[in-house]
Image (cartoon, rainbow, N blue to C red; front, side):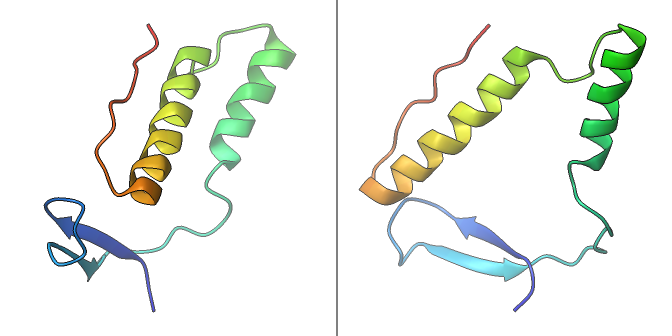
Length: 81
């Protein structure tokens, strides 16, 4: 079983379906470029491309999505600014 994309509407299993993703796989760990960016910022005392706020928003979205799936209901995702 390859990578799948969930399509459809609603939280009911009857309305959701999975379809294969037709895209080439990228070798290596997906976080390597982000880690390289952080290390460069530390070494060069510069800015990172991904801010703390971006990370917090991504984490909150993932946590709320997991909760919505577990509880089978919609949930609002707070946005940090």
